[in-house]
Image (cartoon, rainbow, N blue to C red; front, side, top):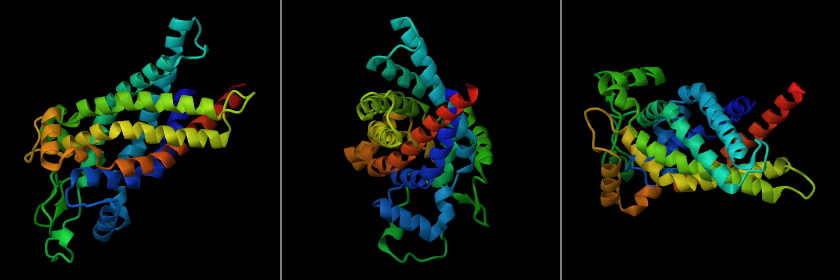
Length: 309
């Protein structure tokens, strides 16, 4: 049941948060954007509403599986740890048990999400060129982005025609390693961020549960889920920046030799604050997205338990 509920929660979450995720990736990887609103305005001006949904089809198709695995792995690991440490699966878990189960959930999901993250980032970075248009504002004549995904051919055909074509192109040009580019940063991002995610949700639910009840009400779930998402992304943002830059670094124009080189180069060129690019946007996006994820997850759990009894 946890796998089903997790899948439902994940789909609801991606529907809410994808446009801001596109803005986040572009801020982290393109130097020409001076802030959130500048990026939003620039994207809308050049690509209209569709620009915010580039690469959406693949996450929608895969998010149910990934979210299902994340929540299912967390619950199964927690049950096994409680059985080993406390003698029964339904024993109240310690905070360390929750954090360890969350960490395991984050590690497992990396193997599923790395290829889709590569495709998502490259499609989000594939911006519409303006070859014959003179810049109408200073920011449009800024230096080119660090990791552009070019349009090719005389007719300005995009390099990638969709998620599947993107995956096939990356695999052909860069091999299997290309599909898992940035996976080391993704592993570091998701491991400790999911430990923070589930631990903070459990603690907040405990605080927000009224006396005499075993669970918080709907408002408590919404607040706990939103705050858990914000805390998790606050922890994850530095490695998320490095992950996005490594995955956007395409064949023929590679700037980075690996995680450490990317981190050192980025900090040397742009300062320590580069590691926190997109932090405000991540946190703003995380609250409504994870509020919806946990509310949908808990609702689906109650529904499936009700149907099975």
